[in-house]
Image (cartoon, rainbow, N blue to C red; front, side, top):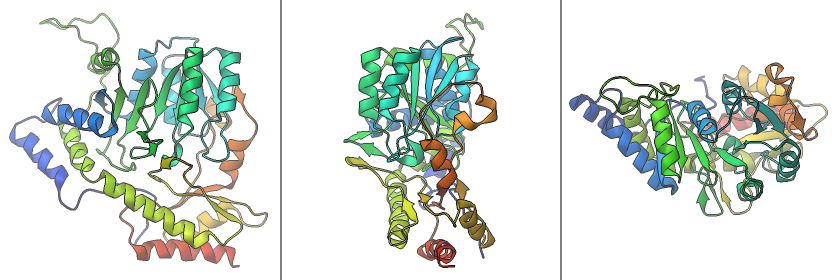
Length: 370
């Protein structure tokens, strides 16, 4: 049987991406910059409803530059969601700052706003990084209000949530800075890439400056600050422009995948499929489940799927449980740890057919019917 993947690149059947790539070849705009980069930035900004963007080589680079622009320096505290991918946190260490990890709320799996306020009062952080995990929105309006009241810079990690709309506003546009990722497994991809978004033009201009080796405006190479090679290439941006044409289609496909799983498992009391909240249109980047059972574990479901050539994956292991971050503080109880212990990410590849989805459903059901 052909392998069913968790999430993989999905190019448009119309070939939009190739049109922009061929145009770049025809004009010899291969690298480093060109029309595709400029237009990709403009098109993303217009789509999500924000004033300015900078196209970069990864979402991780975007987080790093956001921290620098927020003024984070050695020894500063940065509050971070513990239930996330490590790329959310690594840039904090790049700047020799100190992460403090915050627990999740059960509903969205994202930052618990009550814990955020307490942590801000205790630690007096320079910035906070909030994540929209698996494409479900955090209570970002509440978190924003808390950050504004305490003068904390809000960095919104929307790497997994492009296409998610919360209270009629796109995720990635609430914070002082928003982060998008176009990695190969994301809802749309540029093969690898990211974007920094903000309504502050000065900050985005500075991000572009840092991302191009911090070269001053001289005819020779003049450098007064440390810079980085973080800019997106014109070819990569062409892929992104083509992918934007199918973003809404991909969101609907992801939502169809979720609905299929939800309807298939809703009568199994041990299975809970995580759903979007009120006033939210989630992109459901990955459909995830919690298993409430003393006899059936996520590993058992994972093994059964793997035996049928179907890829699944455990939920992110919380950052405060990672050996590399063992010496940093954690605020909360055990919500994120329980989600890790009981959670599983189901195949959410937009190239799956309904027959593929049924294969997944049948295998999962077979585990609970033993």
